[in-house]
Amino acid sequence: MKKLLNTLYVTSEGAWLRKDGANVAVEVEGAERGRAPLHLLGAIVCFGQVGVSPQLMHAAAETGISITFLGWSGRFLARVEGPQSGNVLLRRAQHGRTGDDPLPVARAIVAAKAANQRGVIRRAIRDHGDPHGELDLAERRLSAAMRAALSAPEGDNLRGTEGEAANAYFAVFGGLIRAEDMPFTGRTRRPPRDPVNALLSFLYVLLTADCRTALETVGLDPQMGFLHRDRPGRPSLALDLMEEFRAPLADRTCLTLINRRQLGPGDFRHEETGGVFLTDEARRTVLTAWQERKRTVLTHPFLSEKMPLGLFPHVQAQLLARHLRGDLDGYPAYVWR
Image (cartoon, rainbow, N blue to C red; front, side, top):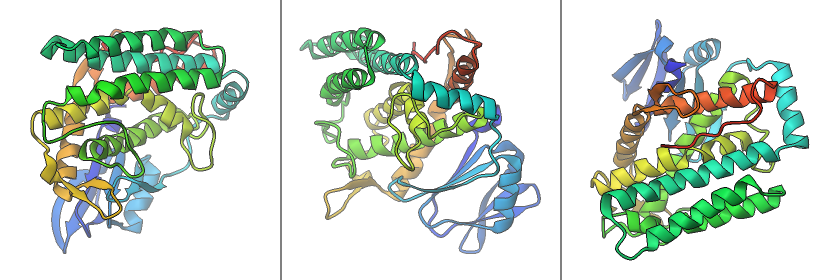
């Protein structure tokens, strides 16, 4: 499982990836820029115009390494992977539960998401105070949303509760940013309209890819979710799982990069359409910080074991699989502490 924490990110324009013995070699303009042993990799993520040799694709498929292609903005383009290893009984159980009784798992996910958003607010109050009381109000609204999620009578009501929690959280998220030249007034997507939203969107793309890999590793179908409705091409279960990790993984990385001045307004490019995106160099900075955040060692609340935060999605995927098999009475969604 630990090898799945190791992801090779390739961001150099025009890079060429090839198999060299038991290694991945990365070349740019004919010169080798780096290499990594295949047996230490769980995934390869390519941004922009990156080429991959057929020999490397074959080796990756045989050894269970996924190759994901993303646009420069982080938009998903394609994924190359070998045969699915999930067993049919687990997937039948998943498909049956998502169709007949999705609410218990969905409730747990939304409640955990609200609790983790509340955790970000509480940490800000502890570290910097709350002179105007706005954070305290948001914390109480998130606590109420968490309780409401656990007793939601049906799916639409639950999704409404999730929306209320998101409104409370993002209404004060700008107050957690201490850089005056990086304002945030609300969540915008497709495209993001300011640097903070551009950074959040990019981090959420990375998180979705990690969650999808975790689910496929244990044999679950990433397309069939409990909370997110089914749509062609949408990895609904991966989007479900990532809800638990938005705040502790992606949002905390965003705040750290901005508040430590590792990123500033000059690290983003503005397009004529109004969209805002990371520059190439800034993207590399984010990827480094992302990997560092995933190496943070925390105690898993259900297992009571210490492990890197980047492995938590894989643990949660295993717990969900155990629940669907009947080994656990309920799904213990991840609550950050």
